[in-house]
Amino acid sequence: MGKSLPIFNAPSLAGAFGSIQQQVTQFFTPSSTAPAPHDGRTVDDFKPYLIALNLTKRCNLKCDHCYLDATTKSAGGNDELSTDECYKLIDQIAEVNKGCLLVITGGEPLVRPDILDIARHAVTLGFMVVFGTNGMLINDRMAKELVEIGVMGMGISIDSLDPQKHNRFRGVPGAWEATGGRVSELAAEGVIYVQDQGSQLVARLAARPRLVLDACAAPGGKALLLADELEASGGRVVAADASPSRLRTLAELRRRWASPNLSLLVADAARPPFSTVFDALLLDAPCSALGTLARHPDVRWRSRASDIARHSRRQSRLLEALSPLVGTDGLLVYATCSDEEEETEAVVARFLEDHPEFEPATPPEWARPFTDGRFLRTCPETHGGDAFFVAPLQRPRGDKPRTISRDMVG
Image 1: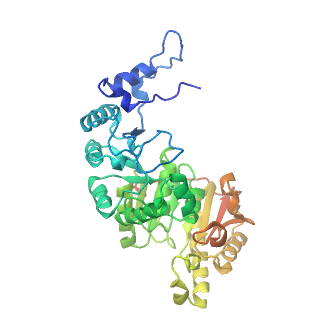
Image 2: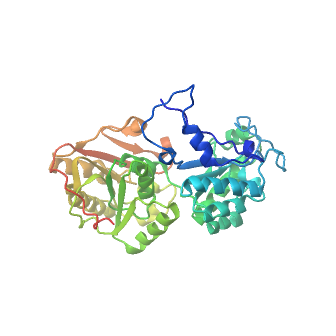
């Protein structure tokens, strides 16, 4: 193993700023007492792509577990960087890689009265800025201002789904209630995207390296998660949908999330325009949505028995149209937010009978808790959230994949 990454302790730099570039250079320069391999690489080959700045020890909570030994005082300590010093530190980071992900955290960063100015300075320099916060200090005005500044996202700490356990862990009564309300405001402003665990399960199962098609992508939560999962490995996601207006919504989400490896295309999944094959294909099929009754109780009044059969026929047609796009050793993930047999096992059984080149895939270890027979499910009574059915299907035999046309997915 090589040496661990350098740690830049912001408080220790107060009054004694050196060049971060010099510090990184020094870190990668082998000392006479600790020989290191010489493979021709320089400091320019080791640019940081994520940096967390703990800019304050101040906090509005009293968590026993806090690794910063945060305090609840309203004023900063004598080891806290001033606004100008924070600007200077961020300027120095920009000299190394101003396009990296900059996580502004603490303590609770939002207790600093200058924190929005600091975030604005970082955004102006080209950083992708994200806040790590407990969420209690976010209100409607704050959420709007974060969006206007250009903050890309918020990481909100929730320690338990049980409010009493969360409050006890955080050391302040009402912490859960305050944080939960802030999540709704952030979602309304587009700072965060709230996603059911069933949706996350579906997207993560389809996250194969290289090239993935999300055939019915709008409104786009799964496509965004797929792009996040594949970005580090250089994988690409094509998000297609037949509705131009719904795809415009996804385009705005892509802009907010800055997903460079996500391409959008208006396309009907029943008549896919592609002349290539994909390493993985996600079909989150249009369905009755009866698995979302807990969130959308009105579905029960809008659904008729005949709708189930109609959806089932359409789902079979979509599988038939899309399956030729799955390459050798590729994965076809069929999913519905319905638990009706006619839309789940029955559709997959017919498909497998007509297509012996596909077979049920073995789920990864992390997905085993959701296994139900040959396929996977999320159940409201067991897992909470929506009911999802997921059938990952492997194609171990088939035509050799062809080279993708970049014009098709640009």
